[in-house]
Image (tube, rainbow, N blue to C red; front, side, top):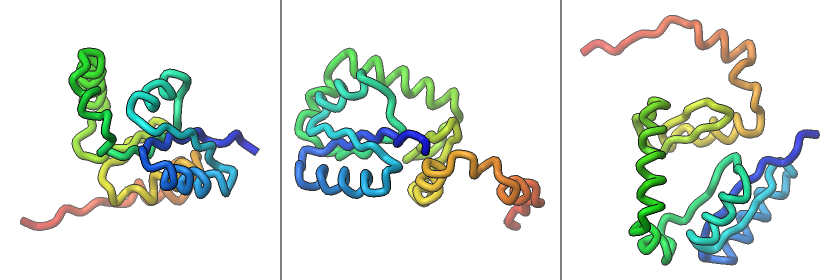
Length: 137
């Protein structure tokens, strides 16, 4: 069995974080790592890579971190990288070097995270070769 995929859960609500961690760990596919603040999450990120992150965007220490020159430099580098990748919408997810954008793709993102070779499968390849139509203006 392949090793569990590491997921970073960042939320200051300990009960919510614990509940999400329990749900993710239930299927043995994911190994949740918890952080209760932006500062703690940053330390966890430095410890290793994660398949994806679930982040509470309203964390109390987030505003203070935004003012840090280090964070600003990282943001600039990330924006440059996003442009290189061709990101043109938010949210954007990268799974197995495949780019997904838009909240409506989340079910597919999770499926690809669980089944990494699915996009290379015969049916997906067949569908990818079908003729495309453009709507009339």
